[in-house]
Length: 118
Length: 112
Image (cartoon, rainbow over all chains, first blue to last red; front, side, top):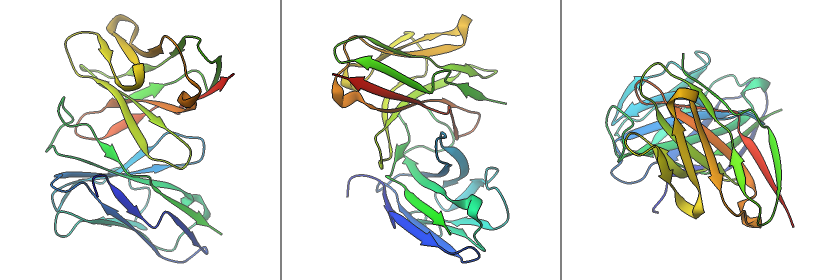
């Protein structure tokens, strides 16, 4: 497809279970971002990839969160031993660019995965 | 640290009326500024962006925004609102590096 694709759209898990969220960026986009959007809040940065390299993971809230992009295309965000506070919408974005947000390279967002932890 | 403040959580305007959504940012260098719109259950769609040059930027769907460095503001405007504009609007600053820092959003309601 032409846009950023995320799956699943909805995920319900019991507290303590592991979950994996997938992001297919726009073809050819070098940069990939994950954001967490809690209910009623703006998105908050989690992590950033340039190709397969994870250049910034400063926003990951704990070591239960892990992201990978092994071939520089599809990315997976994994949350281990989920907690209720992990309930949120997880947004993925991609951009053509490399190491800065500039005039030709806005971030394109997917529709997100809504994660609910019971 | 970079931050974005959107003072209005909700705004209600009549269809056909003008609209201004406020955004103030805190950033030490020249900011990259964005407005995104989010409809329920959807991702964020870019409305417009400011990187440099003309401080009045035009975007999609008839929106515009004005960068005012002296006020650290980047307010979004539209001269005549349509019912389809009802959504949540997010202002964001491109922080050092690559990430975006978002405000908490303003929910726009349009009454007919």
